[in-house]
Image (cartoon, rainbow, N blue to C red):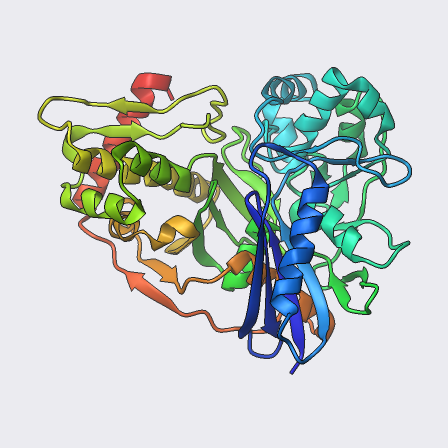
Length: 467
């Protein structure tokens, strides 16, 4: 048996899975928590990565032959000339650089030009916006910065033998704001502009199955990728598949053959982990909308499901705009959640629970519509992430999306995608290995009900934010 390791370094934890490279069977798992917050020292990721790998390999009789890392996108890791971390990393969900994102957009060609060059329009999540914030607010740290990496780049580099060069892949690089998905090249002029003339070194961009080096123990290192790209690879997503991931953030993405350039910034024109493209819409608010609502109602998540399923579709007229942590899509970094339509007749725990589920999913339905406007084909939805296990989410999603919704068997798909990439790099094959993914299908419900729910959400959003 050939054993490979896939690592998912997410916002909340490091997860490592040991996998049989031939079949994709998961042999063992390990996990270690990350500190909470939007600013974290990368050393915390390294400690968690080592712990997760140790747990996943503790009972293995075969050596690990290859490892790859899929990490949270956009995070800003700054290193000095000696390779030491300059300051704690700013994570994707840190909104402090929203003013810098707007300034960069205005000063360097406007949204259409940014979309043409980078596939996306800068928002606070992107690395380039965070670097502009660094230059403006911490110029001494900007001066010290010799290299800029993404979280998965840094972990891959730490796993490698001493002296290994820093590398990245197209998928994660396409979320920085200074990379061209269409050409596969860095755009150093944009990086230098964001940093007020400073020009730090960038990692070499590897091909999908190219090796990043070896560990001190001799295991091959895959290129690694971003977490969304890892999930698509782990799921085996292809044309016609739209992945809706309900984790800390909510994402809607699809594999495409051609790059996208959507000038409003709603769709990020990312690359995937196979040499194709991954147009993506992201919301800041997903699973935590449900956990926050459950806490407010004094129930656990199973209790929230029970309440939501006892309510009628439409929650008696209650609509929740779920921008509890601000929002990225639509770009409302300072927004808060809004509950609309309260009346004495509908002020029940059941309706509030239902409104939370419908509101969270409605923001992602808007994401699917934005992908379709970019020519993305949608034949089915693959619903993944922690909140996909919710019975209420599974009941409401087919109504709102209006498509067959498949819920893959619970698995760590980001880590599984990283493991698949590791096996691919090890094999030297032209295509990644074929691993089976089981799922349950939920057929779409009544189209008129879904249309009414979407219309009510759109009306509420326009009433409050005029968009």
